[in-house]
Image (tube, rainbow, N blue to C red):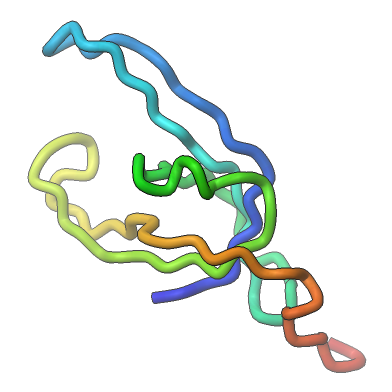
Length: 101
């Protein structure tokens, strides 16, 4: 599954695991989901997987997602989308909106 995603800001949540006592850092991207014409559809926060932390910077991307059903944590048993890939695109690559749209 792919969508146009604009990353506005990437924040880091740092802390210590209550279970293991190990330090952790989780990157979260504040995003706008856009259609192919560039129109905003939704705003939200995505957890950035470790493999994409170097790529996830403010900008416009074609984002790909995988679906999963975690067996632990707050999403246990729920089908959730996980960010799997980011390919930078330029705003001019979006399809222009027709007049009157």
